[in-house]
Length: 217
Image (cartoon, rainbow, N blue to C red; front, side, top):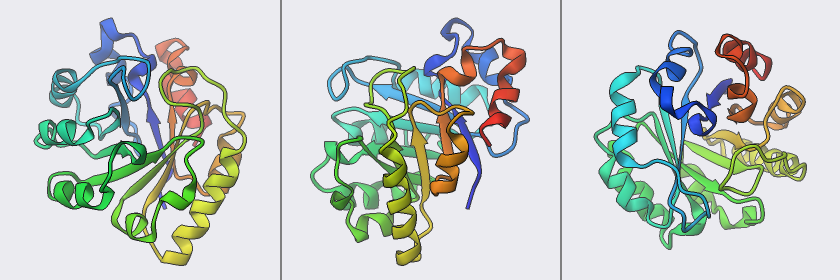
């Protein structure tokens, strides 16, 4: 499996976003994580489709869009020509998860599904887990950066890792929320192979960004 770090630009300096992203250009196994919030599914409002389109023109790094929105199909339709590495929508926002995955598989390198901390893992059917490329485990309530890691997330990651093994599936386990050097080791040991970090990376001086990335590998 992978050993990816995904800096979330939700925590970067938005007035200098192109320069912020440029610090990571030569780093391997790194995705740029794009938190798209609509102010409805989650209380916060961030950036949307036009900003992502511009970012896609300014970097060669893999872009990873996390759709915290009530209408993920609209966003997936509008962004399907942007060359994104991965797009993730929330299980809680759709009635027919498998149909949405099937419809957009031809347009995205990877498609993922995300679950909120209180969403039972039982809602992820074997069919869904076999169909996706990534499962995003939210280890905080989605909507705002800088929250503390929910410790119960470790058991959820372990359960998904075991399920992946039993199904002989290949989905990545991505974890988002409160990731830092203090918990990255135990999160990876539980089975995660893709860690999203925002404030932990971007709260420092730019010269320390890559050092922070390496500290959670």
